[in-house]
Image 1 (spheres, rainbow, N blue to C red):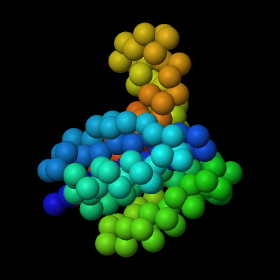
Image 2 (image 1 turned 30 degrees about the vertical axis):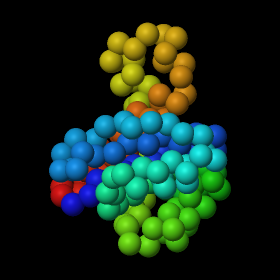
Image 3 (image 1 turned 180 degrees about the vertical axis):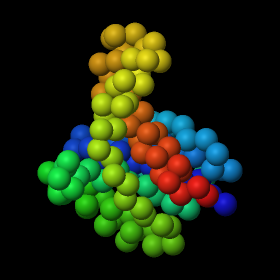
Image 4 (image 1 turned 90 degrees about the vertical axis):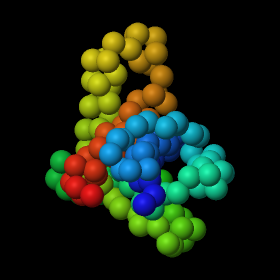
Length: 138
């Protein structure tokens, strides 16, 4: 059984989280620049087995597509094209950035480090992954 990888796709950065091989724990992995995603995935997948990609899919409070889908949908299409043997799942990501910022504050991260948007993206990806794991109950 392979890992599950979550992506919090943004215009500039993509937060990435993965499960352990047993799919018990979700943990933040890294944040990459959006243009570096495909090189990162190629290198990571050469070393680690990933069965499922979980992509944060933002909708508004009215359940309408968010404007951010302009850069998220192309990533989803490319994942499905480049990795047809892996599942690609969309998960509602409403409020994950707010939850991530709160988790970072609650975790005692110093104020200067909390300004790191890459950290917020990585924690957001972890929250997306945790949400998927709770819904899926492997």
